Length: 339
Ligand SMILES: NC(=O)c1ccc[n+]([C@@H]2O[C@H](COP(=O)([O-])OP(=O)(O)OC[C@H]3O[C@@H](n4cnc5c(N)ncnc54)[C@H](O)[C@@H]3O)[C@@H](O)[C@H]2O)c1
Image 1 (cartoon, rainbow, N blue to C red):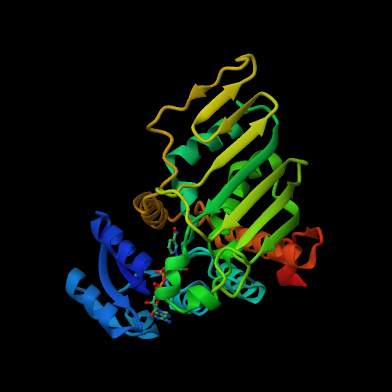
Image 2: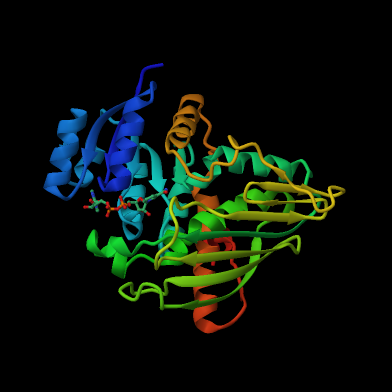
């Protein structure tokens, strides 16, 4: 099969890293980039030897099969819809969108163009350690799942000096919290169903320059009755390297970061082999999955827009639950679209 020709939109830290990952994937050829900022565009054009566009003109380039979207959180909707309308296969970074109208528009467009391959960048679903934990949960090694927790704790105060949108448009429960929330949804969904309710508390102490609350603890309930806690904190100082804590407790066993404890072990627990415990991530396996889905015509990617929309709806409900001090139901995206 001939190489897939790829165009990358948005050249911040994330988009530049994806340019490298597409360039080093043997089935891809990075052919173009699109970026508002002339200096970032020029740097990528020079570094990768590709065509440079400033915005949506990249979608008129008939040479391009695949568009990869790395624009700010609140600028995912328009590029995604336009790229699908232009007939491209589309990758879009997480969070799918950062408001309700955005996810509705994106899922409607996604369903309309269901023959094109679409993947949302919930990167944790591609980590080897997390893949292993999911297998143990699905195979019943831990018994019936009772409680899960994960957190996104990251000192992101440096971002206020980088991009204004990261101060006034980013919502921590969506920008960072969606990683941990999506991880728990994905790990448990085949045995517990999806999350149905949320209660929460939040405050604004840790990073006051941001507009939205920067510390939030959310409590979710799954369809099976299992419960989960997702904590998100954007500052102050935290130890490095930063990772995603994960604990999963079942009736027969538990995983707490790199420790596994099974029924009958008494006070003992064992270390999960070190090679498996790697909560950091690399974008190459995610790109490889996307490319493989395009090559094989598989539109049921590991993170479809419809699935990622459910993470966004659960995160929005979490933020609202904290502000209203109420327990809220989490709507289903298809009911939201049809309403
Ligand atoms: N999966 C992950 O772990 C991960 C990590 C970091 C960032 N991200 C996501 O990646 C996205 C980008 O993050 P970032 O930190 O690189 O942001 P950034 O602000 O540094 O970069 C975004 C770039 O997009 C450009 N842009 C905006 N609108 C555009 C348009 N219409 N056409 C072309 N270019 C446009 C901006 O000029 C900017 O250079 C965000 O959605 C973020 O949440 C994901």
